[in-house]
Length: 242
Image 1 (cartoon, rainbow, N blue to C red):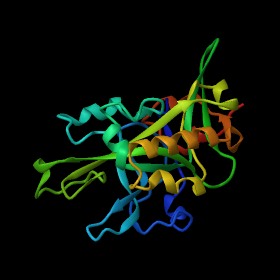
Image 2 (tube, rainbow, N blue to C red; image 1 turned 180 degrees about the vertical axis):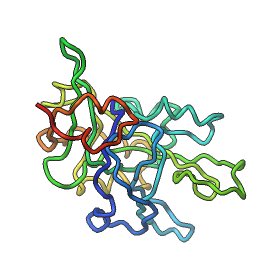
Image 3 (cartoon, rainbow, N blue to C red; image 1 turned 60 degrees about the vertical axis):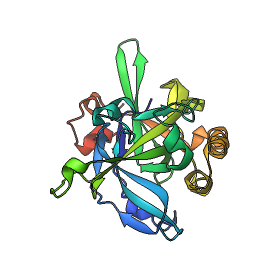
Image 4 (cartoon, one colour; image 1 turned 120 degrees about the vertical axis):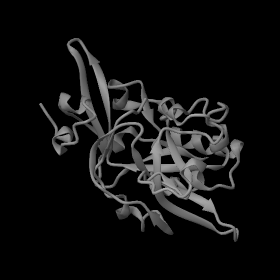
C-alpha cells in the first residue's frame, strides 16, 4: 500500500514538461501527507467544445464515487489494487474514463524488522517528482451551494477525489514492502491520461506501465520514527538517518 506522501516539490515546475493547459492548484510544501489530505493531480477533461484540456488541480486523497452516501468511504479507497481496479465497483467507473497522475516528491513505507518498524522515504533518483498513476472522481455537494467553502478539493459544489493505484513491488523496493504505487516516466503518461481509452484500452496501458517500470529509478533512504506521527510536518521527518 501507499499511505503517506512527501509533497515538498512544487508541481507548478512540471507544467511545461507535462504540457498542462490549466493550473488550479495552490502549492505549500508538506512533508508528511496522509489520506484525506489535498493532493495535486494531472488529468485530462473533455470540454463542452470537445477540446481535451490537461489540468493541474486539487483532489482529496481517498476516492469517493458519485453514488457514495458518505464521504468517509474515501478513507478505505486511498489505494486501488492494480490487479482488480478495472472491475471493482468502487473504481471501475473512474478507470474507464477518469484517470490521472499524482506528482509527488516521494512516499514513505515501513519495513518490518526484528525490533519494530523502520520507515523509509522512496524518492526519484533525479530532481523531478515521482509520477504516480491514479484515478479521480466527482461527487455532488448540493448542501454547500451558496456557502463559502475552504476545502480546496471542493469547487462549484463538487468534491474531486483521487486514489493511487498499486502493484506488487519489484527490485529493491520489495525489500521494504510487498506493494508499491504504479509509477511511470513522463513520456509514458499520455496514453494513461487519454480519456478516449475505455476500460479495455486502459487495462492494456496500465499493464504496460507496470511491466515497463524500472525500480532503479527510485531511491530509498532511512528516516526517523517521527514520520509516524501525521501531525508532525517538520521538514526533518524527511531527512536521512543512520
